[in-house]
Length: 520
Image (cartoon, rainbow, N blue to C red; front, side, top):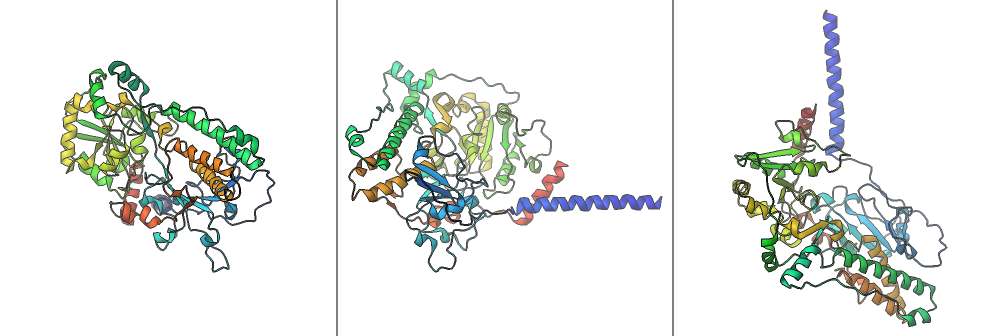
């Protein structure tokens, strides 16, 4: 009997040790976020026999852990005639180099040389890309200071509208049927996007003997027509520009009301999908305060749900279940679109995709009120900064819960605008094609001194970017050059964010163990 008890205790102890070890192992890799970084090792480029001198682009880093190389399909069939990708290991031979900041470990150096890499390869275009906030973007970079990235990059592609390529998770346009209604009913005219078919100059085609010039001209001509047609079809009355208040007033009597069936108007039902439990924005604390208010019920889904919920929710979203999030949100009046950081223009899929679900009104926290007004769909969200306290926000939510006409004002946009990825500000100007065009632009600019035919092609490339009024703020079209960017000013958490320090390691470990114990 005594022996059996000892055996049982040993088994329990062994089980506890194994479980603790497993949890510590998972905790270590989840919290500290250790991984094998990708740093390309330079190799000699194999000789290429290509009658056309293409612009070559190389990815110095992975992109969210995914490798992009010469086998990757990036360009359309037309652009493949003038652009190509190199392997990451061949980056010194590229005309342009792509860097994903979230994947960057360190910038290249020259072994056995006092000269800096950037000084030796001054003609290379280096582009810095990130879809994360300044808080999140530097997690893997081995730097003494952010200033180590200064005077290296020529172009940026970030969530900031001030970037050369403005990344946005979605965009919006006025519904074409709304414009048609305004024109027929009120005789209101709205400027339409119209393009005539682009045709190459006959004398250019006939006179030039250069294979490079002819090939480039034909590719640019096709690309111009492709982009004109695409833009005219997707944004017939411009994109990301709202209707004026006067026009919305004209439309008010004709907008359809929505019927809401509610079991209990004294309870405000809010949904929140969240998987990151430790954030700079301290959204966890805000949610805790909000859900403590009388009549506020916040149902939390995702990995962090056990950290907040005292009860298990019957509904869960698992991978592979289509429209699961949308189906759940149809049962709620509000949705928390809370970002993990409070930084300039940091507005992600939490607003653009989950928030604009056409059913639950998003309550947003992250970028400032002014930045939401500049970027987001008008009257489609409630910003927490419009209220001096959590208590005031709770009062407003109760007011809207009792008044359908007031609540409906936040869903009126669904009858006025379409939302989707086709309407993003720079959808036609992806990073790779932009780098390719600029590479050819620089080459043509140098050729202009001896070849007047290049002037015409320079005009074509400039026109290509004017289709959607893309300016490339750091590129000088008159000199075909850029200034090297001070990243420490442009994308610095100390400059561009106003949130808190990351939760301490002790709090993260506590949250982690608390979640896992709830799961078992």
